[in-house]
Image (tube, rainbow, N blue to C red; front, top):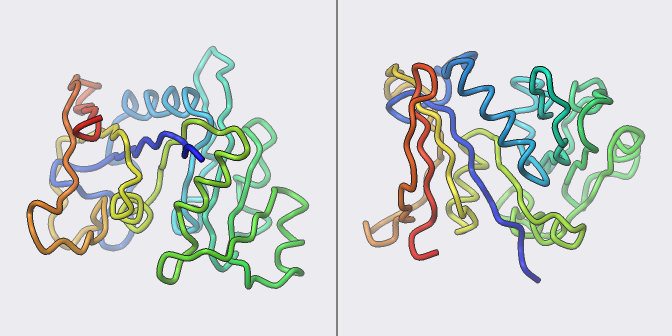
Length: 222
């Protein structure tokens, strides 16, 4: 089965950080970059995020473009232990695309049922360490006709996608500020021991986006 094509969206400081140590992150990039992110959402079949982002920011994950009615991506939440609240904005937003929540197969049925009234809940029994397997999520989405997805998440999910070799393209919005080593990284540990193990990407474009830089990369060799 062919998996969906995966774009990783990053919005960081110059030194690749997505939040301060205390979690503060709104807003690192400027309004022009955020507007382009909404256009990128509309250009993908689905947007994938993790429960950490949902709990921290309570986002809608929909495409909102002033003066337009954009296509709405399906909204996907990876939530191994099903911690999402029924009151989360993403579950109560009628204007965005449908929501799917992927959880571990051991989550009790009664917990799934309280979310199933507002979103499709998909239990999976394949794991990557303590979390459900992103690869298995992509296989499920492919079976649903999803061909393109964009990951918008914290360092944990971004790192999992990169470690698994699942990232085909990076859209990187970089703001002109430095947050330092005590802030949160855009991509968690990749477990590399040699430089030749590092994922390689080719920059295909770079543009000014307000005060930010917008860089696009494709996986080398594709």
